[in-house]
Image 1 (cartoon, rainbow, N blue to C red):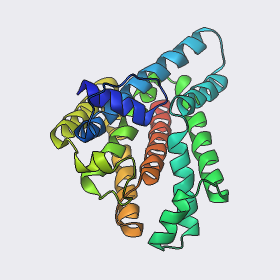
Image 2: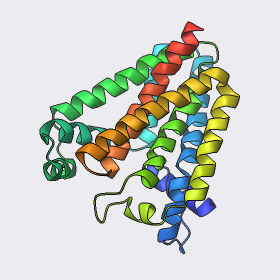
Image 3: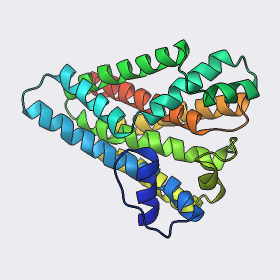
Length: 251
């Protein structure tokens, strides 16, 4: 599992990690199961960063901008790129599967992609700023990255990976299903322990976004790609943070 965790860190972040030389394709399947663990680690770092900046006297809106920018930076904006490509393909592909796949492969970012990125980043900044002024709001900063990456990992056993030779092909072919079940279940337990009933609400939000994403991917592509997985991750993260801001601020 350690090798899988290191490989998952390489896949999901830009953190420099030294990988063992004996890695093979089966480790990529284990790496998928470690996605929620990477998300949990990112969430803890974000919560600590927010606390440090707040303790230094930085106002909540400014802290929110720094936290969201830090998350985009540490992940290399990889998932935001997937969101943009998916948005462009969804609007520009007109329901044609091959055209959508071709658009997602194009490195250019169209207007739909720009709008999608701006909306998601705005949603995150507003939600985080609200959470920072809310008692216990830090919990959502921990849980949102974990739940989002858990949903991304859950795509692998439920949908075929449609792009031959893509980064996720080996992970889908050698998926460690039992370990994935364990890490996803652990993520639910952590959510309930840290946030109680609010944690259940966040889990249900992540599940709702996930199933909507699965329905769209199955209908439009017959499976998923790395880009659509990234789009799911970003939208889930934003939705969980917005739900947390509504639930916790309202409480």
